[in-house]
Amino acid sequence: MGIDLHAHTSASDGTLTPAELLHDAALAGLTAVAITDHDTTEGWAEAERACRPGLAVVRGVELSCRSGDVSLHLLGYLFDPSYRPLVAAMERLRESRVGRARRMVAGLVAAGLPVTWEQVQRIAGGVVGRPHIAQALVGAGLVGSIEEAFGPEWIGTRGRYWVDREELEVLEALRLVREAGGVSVFAHPGAAARGRIVGDEVIAQLAAAGLDGIEVEHPDHLPQMRAHLTRLAGELGLVTTGSSDFHGSNKAVRLGQERTAPEALERLVARASGVPVLQG
Ligand code: AMP
Ligand code: ZN
Ligand code: FE
Ligand code: FE
Image (cartoon, rainbow, N blue to C red; front, top):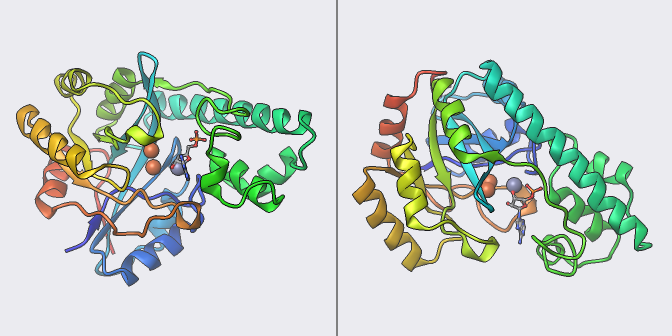
């Protein structure tokens, strides 16, 4: 069994189309894959058409959230994509992404650097994110890699050309996903290298507010963190998942690199009532 519950496509900042993602998931021997683009369900329709025998598809989203002044990501799965309050919240998040990306590019342009908003828009196609600006920086020869573009001299968090953006209060996001019949999993809660993380007391608070699971196996989690989160999930009665957070060539991880146990997916599916898992 191979289950990977966190992957991005060209609907946000992944480089494969949804159909290509499913093709590669089958090639990698996966039995289930989730499509979880940033703040959009735009990729679902193509994934539905590209569904193939032997590969279950879990439709989801990765919502940009905030708890106090810490940014965090909430994975929502199997919710009704037409639930108006959630649709409206995602629209606001995407609008904020565009304004913020334009401001980051304006900062680069003001510094005399050879990138343009038109170029970033061409690269993005779907929901814009920093990896698209990073690609433009690589294309202009200003940095050697996407990873380098995420450094403090460029567009890394609180870096020279970084601009903040609007995020959804996480308790609000939890409520919206639940009201839409979905389930929620806290994405990479221990990814300390990527920015500030919340303490265990916040995870406990989210669990009390209806959080269903936490991502334990994730490429950005060190072994100690995985052990800690496994213990915490046991104490709080949370489902534990494992996922690659695949972004195609925008990130150095393989699809299926981290995996979820079948029982964990079963527990999540049993609690969801928005849309079913697609069976090809
Ligand atoms: P944004 O959502 O526009 O703020 O951009 C954040 C996205 O960039 C996330 O999806 C991350 O996966 C990706 N990202 C963050 N740090 C890095 C990094 N060091 N290298 C490559 N991708 C990154
Ligand atoms: Zn991303
Ligand atoms: Fe994330
Ligand atoms: Fe992600």
